[in-house]
Amino acid sequence: MEIKVTKVSADRMKPKPTDESKLGFGQLFTDHIFTLKYKTGKGWHDPRIEPYGPIPMDPAAMSLHYGQLIFEGLKAYRGADGSVYLFRPWENIRRMNASAERLCMPALDETFALEALKQLVVLEKDWIPRGLGTSMYIRPTMLATEPALGVRPANEYLYFVIVGPVGAYYPQGFSPTKIWVEEEYVRAVRGGIGFCKAAGNYAASLMASQKAAARGYTQVLWLDAVERKYVEEVGTSNIFFLIGDELVTPPLGGSILPGVTRDSVIQIAKRNGMKVSERPISLDEILEAGARGTLREGFASGTAAIVSPVGQIFCRGKELLINGGKTGPVTEKLYNQILEIQYGISGDPFGWRLKIA
Ligand SMILES: *Cc1c(COP(=O)(O)O)cnc(C)c1O
Image 1 (cartoon, rainbow, N blue to C red):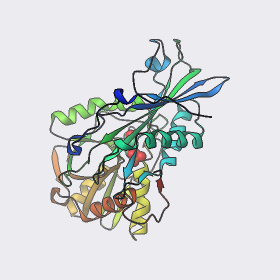
Image 2 (spheres, rainbow, N blue to C red):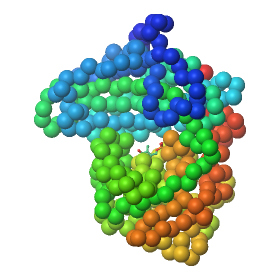
Image 3 (cartoon, rainbow, N blue to C red):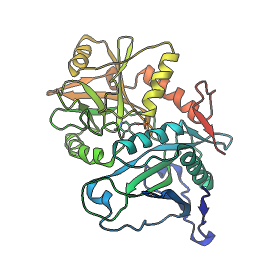
Image 4 (cartoon, rainbow, N blue to C red):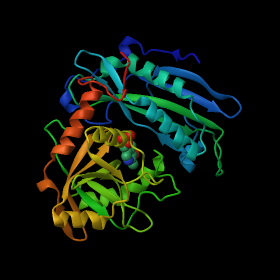
């Protein structure tokens, strides 16, 4: 498929931000959008790169009513020499298709989807900020557009990609988070759609986030939906604990999002010679390890922050401090190792980096 490119005229281009320290996250979008349509019987068709703007949608579009809406999140990084890299982008495209399959949405051609994404990022590369830690966030999205009411898989879809510059997550160094253990609400249940980046999962999470925020906590630690016994994720990130010499993270059991960063942490930690386990971790085990002094570090993993140290956990009326509320050395080392691969600073022993410009 040939992508039809309509560039925005020079006089309509948005001004690019000049102060990289004020970029924030998810506030700015560039001049162009990639779109691709789907119709049953016809397949994916009409790929375009066009000026960024509102997408026309019928009020009866099925995604607005029944929630067939999935997305992805990845970044483009600028190296010191100006090169532009993607980090394991094929994993995001595969995961998009896994989400699509679960929500009875059509699969993308993975090779074409990566080509389209690259073409958009390269077209917008002047928007990629330069500072270490800054990047361009890439948001692929797929939604049902068929105008019809009735609960069934839609016959028409739109896939689009928008991109925008984002600031460094840690402009003033690491700031460990305080997390709230949520024992009432759950995020996802095995057999449901917790392993998908599906919009409904985030709607389901808002109430607990609000509750945690009202009490002064930055993130929610989710427990399993059946027994409320095992830890699953933190906010919209995966969770790791260093207990003694073992780096542990919950296994992917259908209710946990298979993070690209999670997998990268596991592989790098193993290469560093650490013992890494994907196994159920009960809240009791964490509290006991905390009491015994073997709970050495905790961190969340995700594309936005790479890793985000957990400094404090509030549970059953008690505060549990991890590593004195400070970022631990293992967390910091893993952060640096991933960052250095992403920005082309170090070698790329796993073949994760894709240079696109
Ligand atoms: C996106 C996401 C993650 C992290 O995935 P990455 O691929 O590492 O960015 C973890 N949990 C949830 C719920 C997510 O939405």
